[in-house]
Image 1: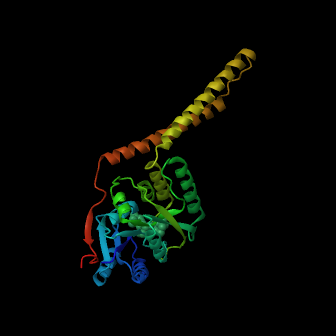
Image 2: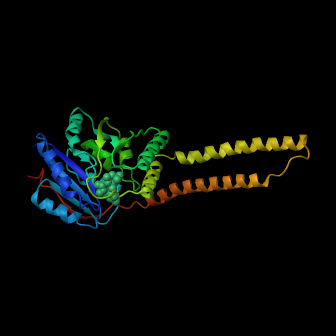
Amino acid sequence: MKPIISVVAPAYNEELVVNQFYDRISSILNKIEDYDYEILIVNDGSKDKTPEMVKALCEKDKHLSFVSLSRNYGHEIAVAAGMDHAIGDVVVLMDIDLQDTPELIPAMLKKYEEGFDVVNAKRKSRDGETFMKKFTAKMFYKVFSASSGKVKMPENVGNYRLVSRRAVEAFKKLRETHRFARGLFCWVGFPTTEIEFEREARVAGKTKYNYKTMINYAIEGLTSFTTAPLRWATYAGIFTAVIAVLYLIYVLVMAFTHNPSLQPGWASMMCVMLFFGSLQLIFLGVIGEYLGRIFNETKQRPLYFIQEYIQTNQGRQ
Ligand code: UDP
Ligand code: MG
């Protein structure tokens, strides 16, 4: 029997792209002769026709699998559900909107055959994305790699990647509620490489991410991989304490030598107090972020519930 490639694609309100995705991905996978394939679409609680459309495809094509979650859990959880249900010896994770060029899959497979467990698709360009999105993404990678210690996340690598069965099994063991898949795949290790591609614009439909969700996502990524922000609070505290002591010395010296010329500077005092007040609030917030995560993780809830699962006939004949 041939080995199986599973292509996992989460979908949330993607009725405009489902059929295009299916056509394009099938035509590519059909041409790969050494492998059988499964196309696993994870419906993340869509409110449009996405589930019906995927189910219609399942009826006419045995290569399709369909996992439907009980509600909208978010992209990261949908990825986890996809990884849990993929049957392939090798799994390709991609977005359903065809921004992740499917034509790259044969090149990724080649790298896999050379012995790599994880093949990341690195974006050369980000067509169709705003300047702000590109800028914030760049800043995020910078901050992340400066603070995450041993986990080095490659720049401009999204979720599009090929993963071997043993790396998938490792990924499946990480059951945290606050998830950041691209970091988790780095964390599990194994031989990793990347290939470059031009990320395309969405074929249809709209992005599900706005600035608010993107900022939250960045905070999620940072806090689930590093406690460095807590350390920053300590550093900031030490730094301002040193400044305060130096300033105190200056004040005393002035008081003794220029007596009584030292004027009380109320306006500047207010600024200083406001500054330190807000610094304390910011770091209280940072502590709160971690506290909230401890709260959520200790509940140990299951990541998701499945409403429906249709498994491909592949590998069961
Ligand atoms: N997605 C999901 N659940 C969500 C939001 C998005 O499964 O709550 C899926 C979406 O259908 C798509 C992928 O995640 O396949 C990436 O979403 P999108 O294209 O909106 O993000 P962008 O590419 O703009 O970062
Ligand atoms: Mg997209």
